[in-house]
Image 1 (spheres, rainbow, N blue to C red):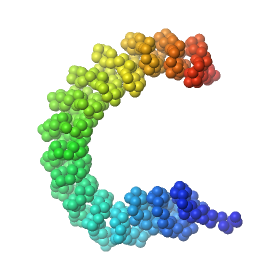
Image 2: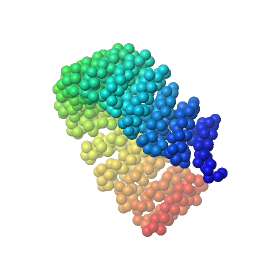
Image 3: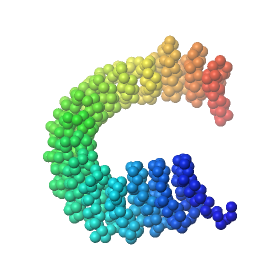
Image 4: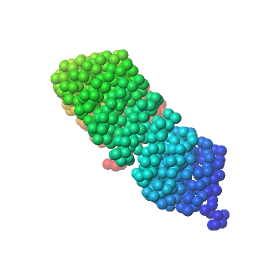
Amino acid sequence: MSMVDEPLYPIAVLIDELKNDDIQLRLNSIRRLNTIARALGEERTRKELIPFLSENNDDDDEVLLAMAEELGVFIPYVGGVEYASVLLPPLETLCTVEETCVRDKAVESLCRIGSQMRENDLVDWFIPLVKRLAAGEWFTARVSACGLFHIAYPSASEMLKTELRSIYSQLCQDDMPMVRRAAATNLGKFAATVEPPNLKADIMSMFEDLTQDDQDSVRLLAVEGCAALGKLLESQDCVAHILPVIVNFSQDKSWRVRYMVANQLYELCEAVGPEPTRTDLVPAYVRLLRDNEAEVRIAAAGKVTKFCRILNPELAIQHILPCVKELSSDSSQHVRSALASVIMGMAPVLGKDATIEQLLPIFLSLLKDEFPDVRLNIISKLDQVNQVIGIDLLSQSLLPAIVELAEDRHWRVRLAIIEYIPLLASQLGVGFFDDKLGALCMQWLQDKVYSIRDAAANNLKRLAEEFGPEWAMQHIIPQVLDMTNNPHYLYRMTILRAISLLAPVMGSEITCSKLLPVVITASKDRVPNIKFNVAKVLQSLIHIVDQSVVEKTIRPCLVELAEDPDVDVRYYANQALQSIDSVMMSS
């Protein structure tokens, strides 16, 4: 091939691959567009590659999505910002396709390109594109147009700005609900670029149209607009225009709209300010907490702590706490679960007395809930309550329930309790821990579920770190060693795991005198799984004990295991022996 034809080669290959029946080849070709553009140079990319892509009528959404993504970062390959407008035609075509994710990506890429374009180019190329899409015959073009106004608007002349606001207003009243949904979704972004006088005059009338839409899917998107617009308006305008809408939405006939209000209420409170929140939004929130749809109660219950933080404790106790009591015995387990995940955060808000009087009974009832997720959510947040009421009260009121949950039939609940034990231990202190929880920690080593046994072994290590080797020598090591003769091999394996975790905490002396002999004895076990775990444990002990112990005790044991009939035992024994050799070499 001659040098003259050389640059034609990539584009020829691209054209062939883009027309290939194999979708993977077409995809690869699109993903290599930047390489091809570099090979062609900026001018030929503008004159040949981009027009070719504009005419490319691929019908596979995956290829179109990749193209929309690539074109968004293509400005450097067409010669920089002054030529950015050449990228608009192929993206305009992609804005009209049926597949939503392709359109969304094309809009995202257009926004990225538009935000870099020069002001006169925006007026000459980008704004006409927005107007063409907004007047599109097919609804997909009009949907895409809604996402571009916030880029086009700031650089427009006053006359053009008036026209753009008028076009957006028409989109808010479009015949197709999908277009009105897109207009509602993007209203906040567009409003952020509009001047304050026009914001009150034009944008608020569009917003009011959307809030009274007959489709609940449009109204629920307008709820999000409440928070966005509330942040742009002066506080008195916000109270006058946004607050009545929120209150109406909280009583909307569609539960989806009420659900969105419950989800967004905290942001809406921030928008309207503290005083209107107390007078108007507290009653609205109470209504949502008592809604007849479980989904709405779930969303409202999940925000209860955040909402209480905005109020003073008296208001929270007076209005919100009665609802919380009702929700703690709600007929839906998911409502109780949502409440349990946040209710602990109410303790610091309400203060010590109210927590003891009002919240503790609710915690206890949720700790005894029949649904495991509810119990789990309470257990995982106990430390927040401890900070408020102190450990003495916590141990008196909640510990009996915790001990009960330690034997819960759902293993995930037992697991959550185990993971909470070290924190509890550090707060309760040694004496209390030994009395109430010590026996439990040993009991878990013989649980039927592997995850519990493994967590129990880790738990012993964390307790030994918390209370020190001397305490562990008295309270953990003897009981662990007593279990080494358990008839079931899985429990014997757990003990080996516990030994490997405890050894680094206990130090060389106790490991050599107490733990190592047990491991060496286990190497004579009849079960291969035990023997290869012995090899693993011995490998972990190499760095803890003295070199002489490694040579006298550990190496002979491993040499014996390396000749075991079982292939896995031999493999792990040889691995451990190699570790010893590499330690010897390095020392």
